[in-house]
Length: 118
Image (tube, rainbow, N blue to C red):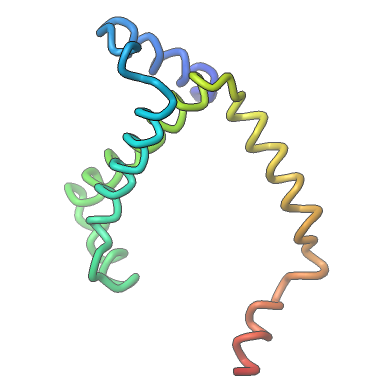
């Protein structure tokens, strides 16, 4: 299995071998991240959840979507790298913060209860 740090090293090496670092400023990476996210969202636009789940049963459609997700992840990892953010550590810490903010015993089932009152 590949760690996030290993993936980051592979992505940075790929980028640096092509001398693309000059273009990978934080602003440009953030913009590219949003553009790639938009390309991912095109696969979902005007479709119901059921239509999307049905579409990904087709291997070629699932691969298209997977590649868009990969593009988003690559730009996110590069942005984290350029800003000196340890993405793995940030995710672990954020999950802990969210766990404290939304403890299971206080929030489990609460959304359902809220909707059933409406």
